[in-house]
Image (tube, rainbow, N blue to C red; front, side, top):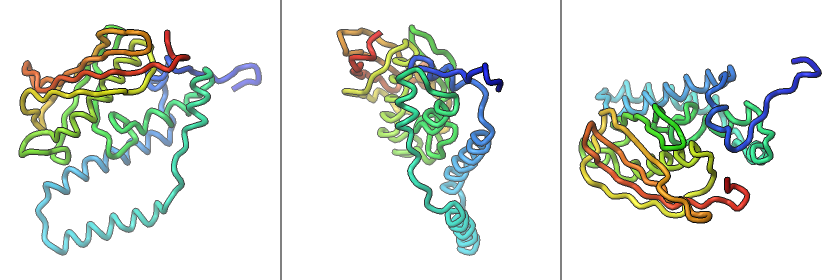
Length: 225
């Protein structure tokens, strides 16, 4: 980069667009690690193995834990402050977004929600949840559903160029939500009243709606737009 060329920076309403840019090389490796760990966690639940094999696997994983050690907590407060002043770098964006607990490609526990459509009118994504997210036999755990829908409603807020935090989240379970099945997740802002944003969402199994959600999100005073 020349001395006259400056790195592009981003503000709070550019988060999702910036996160679709070029992926830093270390995050490519982090995403590979996270994907492998997600597959492993699901497969280990399925696996039937003898005691010797289980002991071997445990040893391999314990050795890796030892190699990684105990790093300090990743602190994104400075990146967050830069974002709200319009000075977040691409690196800041990946530090904040790639470890998101829903859809974060570098987060080993994150359910992988793939966004198909995003606009100010609403969002739509697809997700398929494995055995490690099961509650009742063959069904997604209700707490996992709430976890995902909070993220889906939040995404609709960001797609409409709003920022805020969850105040309340109401979930209505209408039918069984199956594991190992492509599910469609939707959300849109229904109403804005002052700082309050009323956002509604849903999960569908094919044409069948299995869950309805409504959240009240609160905009910070500086976040109203």
